[in-house]
Amino acid sequence: MNEIKKFVATGLTIAGMCYGSIALSQTKAGEALLDRYASAGAKNFSAARGEALWNQKFTHAKSGQKRSCTTCHTSDLRKPGKHARTGKIIEPLAPSVNATRLSNEKKIEKWFLRNCKWTLGRKCTPQEKGDFLSYMSNQ
Amino acid sequence: MKPTRLLAIISLSAITAGIVVTAMADDDRRYSDSWGAKTLPGVAPVDLPLYQDECGSCHMAYQPGLLPAPSWEKLMSGLDDHFGENAELPENERQTILNYLLDNAAGRSNYRASNKLMRNIRGAPIRITELPYFVHEHREIPSRLVTGNPKVRSLSYCNACHTQANKGSYDEHQIYIPGYGRYDD
Image (cartoon, rainbow over all chains, first blue to last red; front, side, top):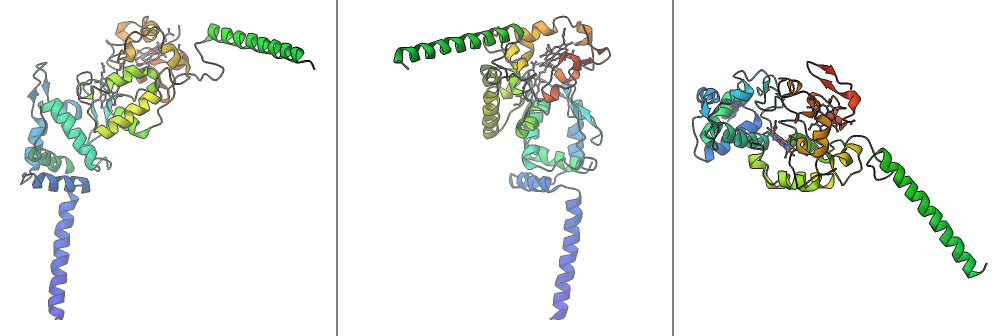
């Protein structure tokens, strides 16, 4: 009986440690959103794909302008960016240097909506948003 | 006291009071566009954190007292194409912010700059920078200090020059144009 208890306890500890290490690379709000994207059919989120999309250039249909996430945020999320039009400084997005980032589900979704429309000319899919989050949260 | 006497006194004092009030109003009109003695300088500072967050992320949060109510109504009904940007909000937040803007719009609060900005407005312009008083006050600034100045870019960015703009103060002694310096004329 005692043996079994010990076994279960060890199992739980290991599971807890694994869970802990996953949580390290994703914020709580990010975790909740990934769950939601997964239940919408997205899977195998990839930070590498997120990074590629982050740097990809899209052509704005109306103006012919090239746009990417880096236009305002730069390709280094640990550094501040600048709004392309207004010039307002945008504080770094990387949670490692700015703890307030990726901490609010609604705020994340709001800016995904606005900035996907501005940059890609359309809404992002749950898969793309999950890839972005996997990339961004590890910066 | 006879009733006629009483009536005479009452009407005399009413006339005197009337003269005093008229004189005060005249006095006011000569010095400012105020509604009375309690006119405050500048525009009312922003005091709604939701507004500060939502409408202060791409540019400074413009004080509600910088535009009249019909202008805010129009601007807030087209947030998905906001000067070429997407500034969409969930409906409940849009409504809260719209109400805040309408309650505190120019013409609905007694601040000196707000009162002046109301002069000669036609229709419902959605740019502060297109209001006649604004245009008049900024007409002498050479464009190299504005559009030709990477630290300013456009007159829309009040806080690039008005050092206390975030507090609702546009006093002419608190102006500093980047690359040029204090602006005193």
